[in-house]
Each structure stands twice: as structure tokens, then as C-alpha cells.
Length: 84
Image 1 (cartoon, one colour):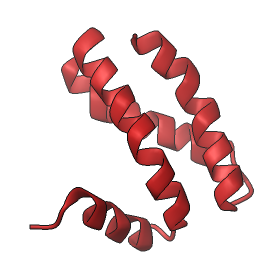
Image 2 (cartoon, rainbow, N blue to C red):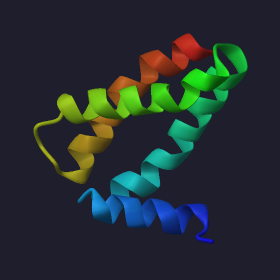
Image 3 (cartoon, rainbow, N blue to C red):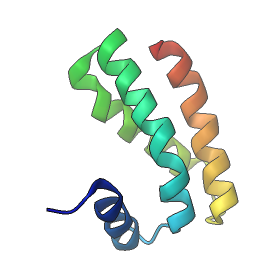
Image 4 (tube, rainbow, N blue to C red):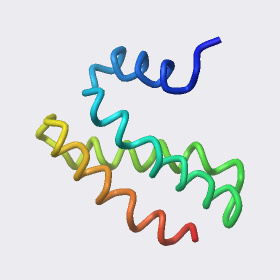
């Protein structure tokens, strides 16, 4: 069985995402899903993470690692605050 970081690296390759984005995004997304699961709705945690990623992708025309990271942070921050 693959370790989490190996699996996520493989998924990033499949989705043609820069590895820097995958590596820097793991902790904030795990924190978000933890907060949603504990404070809002456990079954909604993975879907919330999906929606944050979808919003980040739609709001970032530039696929550079920096632009994608900024889009993720912008989408993540208000949702993470609401989940606490």
C-alpha cells in the first residue's frame, strides 16, 4: 500500500499539477477537513475539500505553482474560518 505522500504525488502527476502545489496544500486541506468533520458535518469534509479545490482551480487562469497556491489559499481561508 502506498503512503499518503506517495499516493498524492501520483495523483498530482495524473492531474498534471505541479508537485509544489500538492506538497504545500496537504496540511491546510487536512486541517480544513478535520475542522469540518469535528465542528460541522463529518460526511461533508471530503466534499468541502473538493469544493475548495474546484473554486481555486476556477479562479486561477495561471497554472504556475505560485498562482495556484494563492488561489487555494483564497478559497480555503473563508471556508476554514467558517468550519471552526
